Image 1 (tube, rainbow, N blue to C red):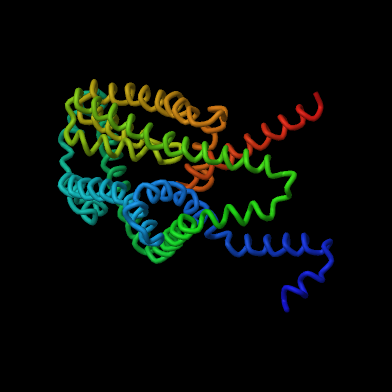
Image 2 (cartoon, rainbow, N blue to C red; image 1 turned 90 degrees about the horizontal axis):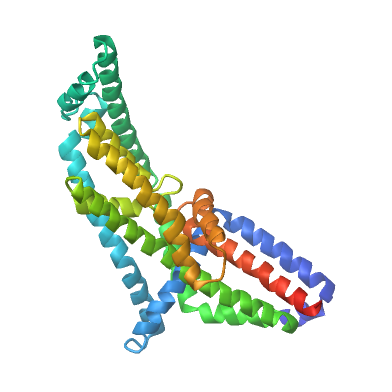
Length: 350
């Protein structure tokens, strides 16, 4: 009955109603829209894993669930190892965060004092520099402690976003074929070729995104580990992992690792290793981010490397971690849409 009434509505009013309902829906979903899109992108990779295990697991839901677990296990183990080691090292080096925040840190300042004294500055200036360094360290750790508290207080919101991400990933991976079929059914016949090319380009972009993010991070981590090893730093593997993970941080990237290690080494008197970490870290980060990443990503698509580079950087700036995937996807599809449209125009107007 409802369908019959819907069919009686003049066709001229259908499109405006659909547009209004779509805009209202997007407005409602705005706070979680990025997470839902991110879940759809991750579902693309889950589907590839699911296809590999589907011959052994006949149930669709179970195969998708196993695919999600396989995708998540390496990341969970990596983050757990990194975080646990970092907490242990920070605890043994700085003492408790509460002590550091109140100026009673167990951290030894003798090496820093000696390094400042070796600068042959007037005594009052040396004292001021030392006090500034001590104050900066205490403020930094105090800020870290407050950030941890804020993170703990935001756990309910983070848990809700993770839950939405998991459900989005699951249903997009499970019902992806139905969604594609539904979209194809509502596309006019004369536009089918155009949208098929867009879908194909999106597939290429998604392949290049994972390759353009994961492989460069692994390369940077390995090169950083080699650098730390030859310069004689401890915890080489942990520092290499942190450097690789830091590549996903917008704008700052691995400089948060190179800068801290280099500056601290200089302050405690290890000037040459500190300078070399900063210099070679800059070379590694620049070559990886501006040469290796675009070159690898473009192997899977004809989209210009600049489009990927802008998508990676400014997608992450505007949308955080999900923007590393969403940014290149949107810019890549937009670029491909213009290219296909231009090709059709040239074909129709030789």
